Length: 235
Image (cartoon, rainbow, N blue to C red; front, side):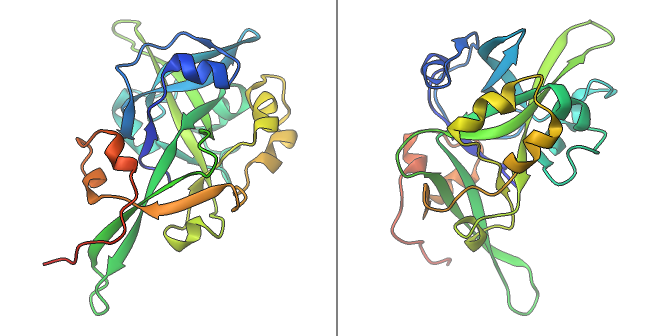
């Protein structure tokens, strides 16, 4: 899965990278994005590419309330075409969620009880320093009482490549630059999109341990992405 990521770049910088127009308003760099947090995502509306604001955790248009958003931060690529929560967005509302890195945790378990004794956080990013283009979906939910619109998004996941499987059994779908246009275009047939829902190649990515401070969703700052050389032993 992808349960935490870093998005420190401004909507204006992301717009330059993704050849879009910035319309998002966010509160500054985010190094520890958590479920339901506001994020910038790249979308196409009426032929115009935009960087807009969404809450992370998809709320389908038919939902009774937005309470389930935190459970829908990820969509499995293997079932996205048939899942009631995601299939409508997959057909017509695809987006790119830029991230400088995403975090995963290696779980250490007690050999006798199987209980988790320690969670070791890792950051995964591109070696060249460019942002990751995570494949996403978006939706609009209308509050039946106020008619207010809530714009939300989710990130697609797939099986891990050799780099990620060292710590986790899932990874986000990462789009190559040559696939951005097809992913965002309304008219792209689903048959053409299926090959994009694959694990990323290993060579462009690096993985390294980071501070356990990232475990706390309240932690913020560029230091969260700094590599550490060793873990302190548990007392």
